[in-house]
Amino acid sequence: MGNPKAFLTIHRKEAGHRPVHDRIHDFGEVEQTLNSNDRRMQASRCMDCGVPFCHWACPLGNKPPEWNDALYKGDWELAYRLLNSTNDFPEFTGRICPALCEKACVLNLVEHEPTTNRENEAAITEHAFEENYVRIHHPERNGKKVAVIGAGPAGLVAANRLNLKGYMVTVFDKNEDAGGLLRYGIPNFKLNKAVIDRRIDVLMQEGITFKYNQNIDVSKLPEGFDAYVIATGTPTARDLAIPGRELKGVYFALDMLAQQNRVLAGCEYTKDQLVSAKGKDVLVIGGGDTGSDCIGTAHRQGCKSVTQIEIMPKPAEGPDDPANPWPNWPRTLKTTTSHEEGCTRRWNINSLKFIGKDGKLTGVEVQEITWKPNPEGGRPIMEAVGSPEVIKADMVLLAMGFLKPELPELAPNVFVAGDVVSGPSLVVRAMASGRDAAEKVDKFFH
Figure 1 (cartoon, rainbow, N blue to C red):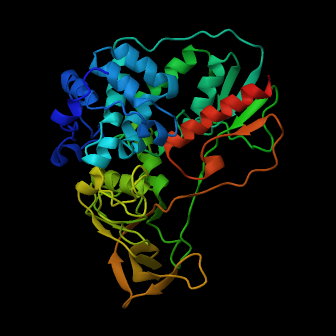
Figure 2 (figure 1 turned 120 degrees about the vertical axis):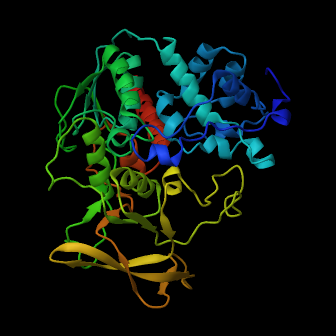
């Protein structure tokens, strides 16, 4: 360990974000970067704990003490090798992971100034691509063929791991390009799609075949493969079946997010096909990350106003969460860069019906509620508070999560990975699941 006392003298320093007045006019990445010297100083703050809770908290089992030390000492290549040994695609997690490792950092417990692991991870990987540390591997083939159904983070990790083990891997995806929700759900201002393209190019050079626009029925898998990995995610969004749902102006969040990403990639839509917030009062129903992404996208499309409502209570403002003490993830109030760009946020709000005129949405009737303990246990009881009100809106985005799909009974040579197994979860957990699925496939043949 290079500097065991750095955490005593060097404070946490984040790269920060582009100014609001600048970033809301484009879809460029919001997050900025530190210079190399500052980044190394941040890496020096890692204390190399006897029990590294960061490693414990990371679904991938990343080893921040090891690659932070290498980064501090200026050995960027070693830092990347250590990072890439557990994380197939650190350029993705370095941008969009909520950094479970940082909340479990001992410095978060002591000072609420954890090591900047996520930013360090992104910086290490960008440096690796710039300096050609990302090598093309040509593994010796073992004669077995594996089909991966779904090119999201779980499927890509499974494909990468199996390919490096010598399997001939073909990835099938229903979309026109790889990435899953990385490409069609997460806005460019969080993850530039050129970052995905760069990695897919590496995977193709290493021998993985990609077949797009393939809507595979998992009960009728393509023939000619020795094993299969199903990583189709959770494609069905949770709907809101209340009166007025048929009105024009009510959309699923991904109707907007996926289309906007496709527009930026060069796709063209007619005026009637466009899901645009330009000049509109937007209501986002759902308080999670997808809802936040809708807010940021609405601003960049030129919305008039944005309101976000959530049926659950407002989380504690932290930084600590008594119900989930360190090193567990604190369920505290999260304010994203999109929220900072302007948004009215409300909690304990239930949606009653969509209101419209001439078939077009004009507002949503909502009801403030409270949650009471259920005397019989289980789900709390929702009770109305006061009188219903109407929130003016000519665009509603439903961002209430996704439904875990039902799978048919699978053959012994068929494995599953990612959200299709767990239900909606984090990208980093999907990646860990993809890695586990690859191990199961390999054991199946040995």
